[in-house]
Length: 130
Image 1 (cartoon, rainbow, N blue to C red):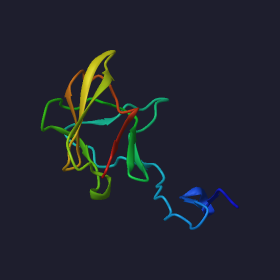
Image 2: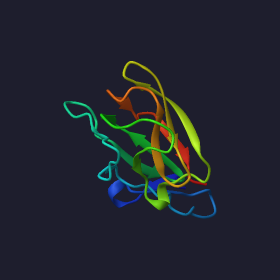
Image 3: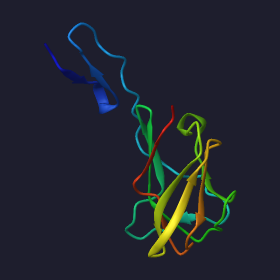
Image 4: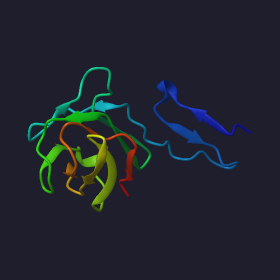
């Protein structure tokens, strides 16, 4: 029996459990953030640009951003509807060589609640949409 098969373009995984094929897992390519708000921009240079992707029901963020306004209810950018968590989440982040806190809200807003706006990392942030 085949154990697994990857669909064309590596955009999803179909798993055979011995009696049937599972529904393909949704997997999207990385999407670069284009809707920055409140003065936030990509850090630039050799660093990864801000982006998001979804694999199954997990959303991943990445990138290094700078120069915006920090605080609760002040957005860096807003995620599209199908990338939003059902509940608010908070994440520890490195921000200007110190601790920062990134909020990802159920309305899709991504915020640097506290930390330095000299730069903030979105790397290693992931959450479920279910």
